[in-house]
Image 1 (cartoon, rainbow, N blue to C red):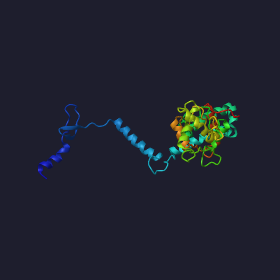
Image 2: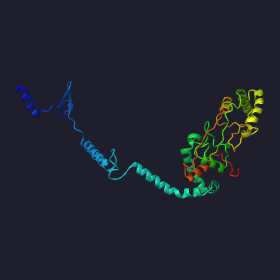
Image 3: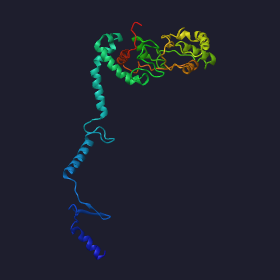
Image 4: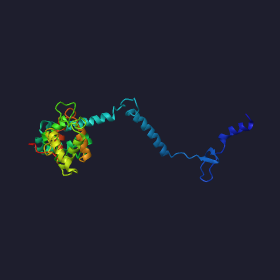
Length: 303
């Protein structure tokens, strides 16, 4: 090693530190393109806080399951376990009212102010979880899914009828008591010609004074009487025993324009609703029944 380099290395630790002329602070000895790094230590309070955070993190990892595959930690806590405990506590608190709901009929629930209020509140939550995706948040319906807040019902709007629909569904494949009916595919199955289907569509429009071809509507009346009146009624008044909708009003499940009506006549329609009896607690079904009534569309129990 050259003597000059040897002397420089051994003399460096004893050299006087460079002091910045503007701040009066010593530098670390690091320099980049003439720029020196000031030797400014962090404040003690910051360092103490930093060390405390490290200690807290280490303690947290030991007490709680902060790392994968570490189990539950020394405290035995998990968020899932806490949520399960909360749900169990809520179920225990709600059980007395739920037991009363299971034992009461929908009419008895309506007659009891406390049960009715509890059922409507609980039914609103259950409706949002299980029904709103199809029927809308307020029961207003969607194309292909009935409006539950009016007075038009495919299968009847009494409390008993609504409860049966909720329990057994519509065309539910897993329930032997489900409500079942099916509209024929008149054109697709060769029961009517396309011209006859067009005439029937004009006749259906004429039931609400919207026909654009009076001659076709007249011809369609005869075809309707022969093929459609047995389900929908002679004047299109509908049949709740068969789930056949009323055609003489302005309430349409899939749309009331001629193109939609013609497509339905030609290819049929048959929506489905799940059977909730095996999926929901009987008390929840009772709450849903009462809640649907509170939307404004349920009929008296006698109907």
